Length: 253
Image (cartoon, rainbow, N blue to C red; front, side, top):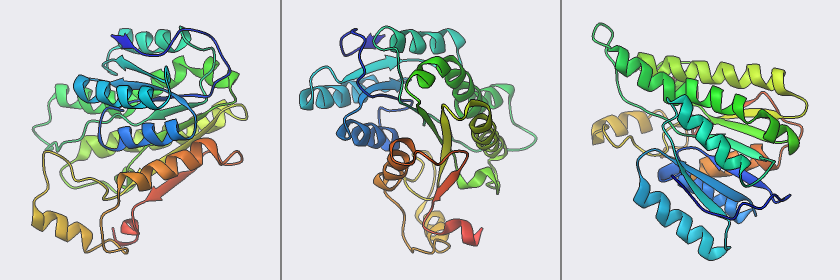
């Protein structure tokens, strides 16, 4: 389902954010909207949240936000995202590959369904979505920012498949920076402890992680959004880079 701004072609800056309904994705979308971008808000299942966000943004600036539902593991759905962009503009200034699935997998009991789910959301979907939008990004001399993880280089215990998928996304960031430059820049942001996962993380676990963070506290979604905006809009000579936003956590891994 597609819901949003008018289908007139324009030179208005546009951004597509995957996983934009809640949490970090929603914060990124609001920041880009504040910078004047019209935004495509991708979501998988959080329809109420994304509709509320789109209504809020459209109230601030009419016809500036559109919602697009898609499963990034389904190529037909990826094609539908691309079609929704092309129906409204011939340019895409910024693609934010933020959508991600995260949960533990135990070696010895990992299922193919878990493998596909984690790889689809964290690697396969971002690659094929980026590939499909190369022309629109090229038309705008645009930028791609991938949401990575500090555990892409140092795996998280009990999360082998997730860590492998994020490692692949980090390599994709570097490879596509070479393949798509100089017209399109590609960078990554690697969060540390920002928002605790909804399905895990007791107080003792959180305290243990924070004890290794140089800044001594968890970060905020705004920390990630600011880094994304910088790489996406304010760093025209930066490509192929990964910016860790982790309060120094990676120094103690």
